[in-house]
Length: 524
View 1 (cartoon, rainbow, N blue to C red):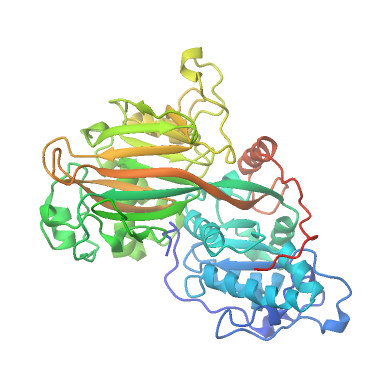
View 2 (view 1 turned 90 degrees about the horizontal axis):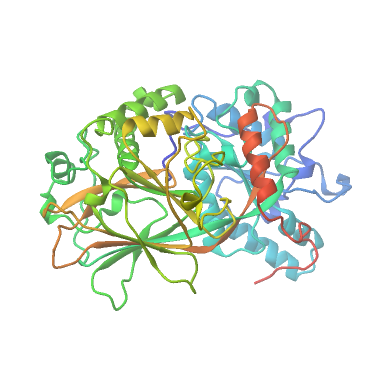
């Protein structure tokens, strides 16, 4: 499942009916009757809400919650219990056991069947449903992709409660930069958060497809051994050989057990070779940034006790960033990228982009900040020469464009990520709705680079210059949209920076034309 950067070590059980004896039942605005949840899991609790004849109004904001108990430090068990108290035990699902695609697909099947029988309440619930992901960027991205892939209509808008380390998506959308102790202090704080979900603005966020094509056919895939010696960016070292148990030159074109959960094998069609494809919502990175995240994952997977708390995770991440050689000796990324070309639409011409020699990592980003609110693009830098801003527009997540940003050496990257000045930001390379990147080792030997997709890093083999199979091709393209919820209100545990960003996102993005979608039944 997606790799969030927060963790607890043990499986946590959910709240029981005994937890739910409240003097004031505040769950009714979010109520989804159990009959619409049938078949979503084996251990579906009984509906603990008031008898049907006592419910006077339709629930205005029926809500489903998915929570990753392995995120959020030591608060997972408490949050699981509180969600059950606030929205109802049957409506709280634990990841990864209860997967969002299967759960939501079954709920929609139940609702559609009821709508066909003339059930007006089912119609109301389907058109007003909201979904919450409690986890990190990977968990939230997983939910958004699942909603898109199963094709349910109308798509329910989704919010994220931050339980990861970076929480970049949560910061941009106004849900905070980290899990707050206020949420587990009492029921009221979590009730306020769910009330914020009910009152949040709905926006469409661009969704992106990614495919990777190798001229080599698929070979037997070798499992990752979680080596303490992750592969280096120099392309041919013993760590990579030991990790996968075979020489680098004999590697398959893709190591499937390392690829992100959203990326799967696909038929290459009439083109010779092998292909992997998937979707993402937040970012795709290549280079030292992805390598640092990959090395951090090795620590967390091999020594979970050393990565138990958020502050430990952050420390390990920056330690591994230094270990990549970012501050000394790292080679330019263009030693591996032989071609980068972009275009802004299907009717536009392709433009080839020269990757600056100073760039050590490239970030293709959909939201306006990165890693918990870091401004890569330079949103507040209005003093650049005219020739540098030509053909570049103010970025926003629903404009059909990805921002392509370069990170240079360690000192430049450190200054960008710490936000020391509005004038220090990533190298603005391009904006595009479609991108092609071709990878080939210029040293004449088969090698490896690191990639990262919505929080999930992996080591990707790439061919040598002049190899018969040709370069590895990565293709990124706009592929529809997801519906997200933006909070701009003061809620418990949400800092001013997150609200400042979310207000910018709300003001610059396009409102839905019809927020009230409760007028036409949707069946399929």
